Length: 285
Image 1: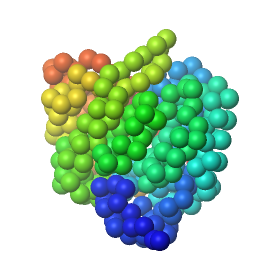
Image 2: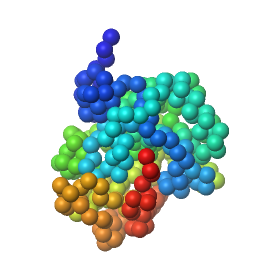
Image 3: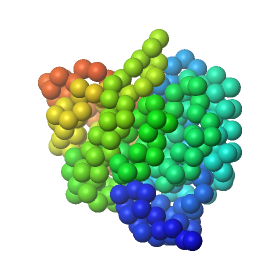
C-alpha cells in the first residue's frame, strides 16, 4: 500500500518516491556522510567529537544553507533500520561522546525503529531544523536523550521567503515544546550533556528584528527548561539573489542580539565568536 507522507509541517500528502514532495526523498533511510564532529557546542563535541550522522535532504529549503551539498540532494547510501542500528554500534565503539542524528526528520519512523533495535549506551542527539510535528517527535520519546533544534524565525514572512516554510513560528514553537515535554531539564556530567534541550539560533545579516523576536519568545516560553545557543557562524552560500543576506554578519549585529538575550536573563547556553564563520567551519561532504 502506498502511504502518503505527513511526517513534517509541509504535509505534502504525497508518496515518497524520491521525486515528489518538498524533501524529494525516498521513504528509505538515506545517509550522505558520517564523521566525528568537533565543531558542535562544547557539551556535545567534548574532547573526542560527536558521532554525526548526516541524513540526506531536508524539510526546509533555506537559501543560505551551508550544508547545501547534501540538503539539496536526494542521493545517499540507503540503510535499513537494522543497518542503521549497526552504525550506531560502530559510532559507539569508535569512542564518540554521542550519536548525533543530523536532519533526520524525513526518516523519523525508520530511525525510531533502528533505536528500538539498538539504543546506544551513549546519548542520542536529535539535531534538527525545528520545523517538525509533535506527533512525529512522539515516535522518538524515550529514544532521544538530547534535542538540538534550530529556532530560525520569529517572522513567518521571512521564513517563507528564505526557507520556503509556511507557518514556521507555530510549527517550531510546538516542536520545541514537545521536545521539552520529553526531556524537561538539562543534565550535564563531566562537561558533557546527557539529557536536555539546547535551542539554536543563527543570527542573519540585516534581520535583527527576527533574531530579537526569537530571543524574546525563547525567554518567555523556554528558558526555564532549555539552554540557548546564539550562533554567529553565518556564511553566505548561493545568496546572490538575496542582497540583504549576501554578506557576512557584522559584529555589531551579533552584539545587539546578544545584548537583548542578556537583558532578558538568558544565561544558560553558548555564544560564538564572530570569527566562527567561513568555509573552514563547514564539513566537507
